[in-house]
Image 1 (cartoon, rainbow, N blue to C red):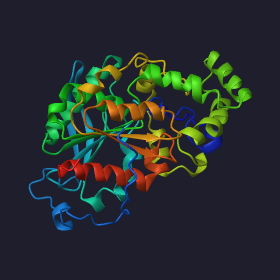
Image 2: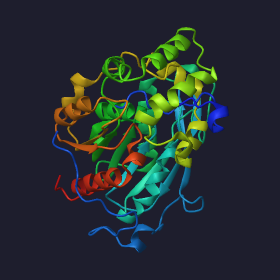
Image 3: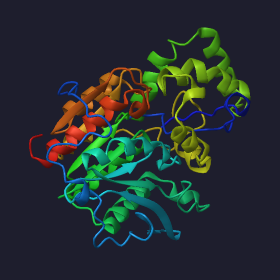
Image 4: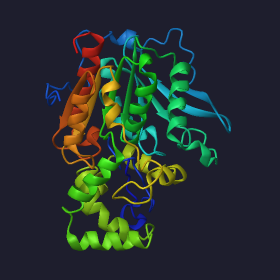
Length: 363
């Protein structure tokens, strides 16, 4: 769930950016050959069928639908966009944060269409493309779960076709949804998210922080102690010493535009209350969230994706893949938290193979 707060002077980005990277969330590493972005996948619907919009009510808007969500504070709209057509493989993408946007998922455009995967971009309530009510009471995990369920119903997804894929905070949301509504799922993907925030914080404290330059860590801790998170020095320290090592492993000035665009749109009115202001650990409403004991209840086919250099503990995510009833682990050996960029062909190739294996009943 953690997200960078880039200093404007450094990257021309807002001082407080957050990516849903704080928490990321075996059967063995998935290292099968990965298709090129434009590859035609054997057994997938023909191109004409994939692009068939017959009977679609979203044709006029190019796949975009605003879905009304009922809440205790009234009804609000959330933004969704469908890409493609596949009756048996439909993937709803859950972005991180909380309070980020769907935009960093746009890397999927280079891979999913070639495999005839139907997929849905979705900005959760409060995120940039959706309504943003000033209602702190709505920023609670159970309400977000009910929102996902309302989106599922509106999109007509069910257990014959519905795959839920959540990254970071989206992984938390996907786990919670599966534990309440897995009867509606065909498969589940948990990307770069642990099943326990206390375990995430312990990993940050015991593994990630000791690996930092002690002088850098001391200065970062001093700024946090003063709650001086808006100080440009805070991100000047963290970008090269934390983000470029554990979030996306290349110079931040070279980070992909969809990712930096998503960071610019973060809603801190949601992120900070739920995640907390620190870039080195969680301290908000999710502080005590822990579903490790409930993982054996998840019976649908589940893919867990880990990055070797992630902010999330790889060993913990390997445990998750073994603990759910029908799990598979995809290891991205060059990745930080944003594995869909750091190990892109392996990442999307592994996801596509999982979707197809479940659909063909060969998982």
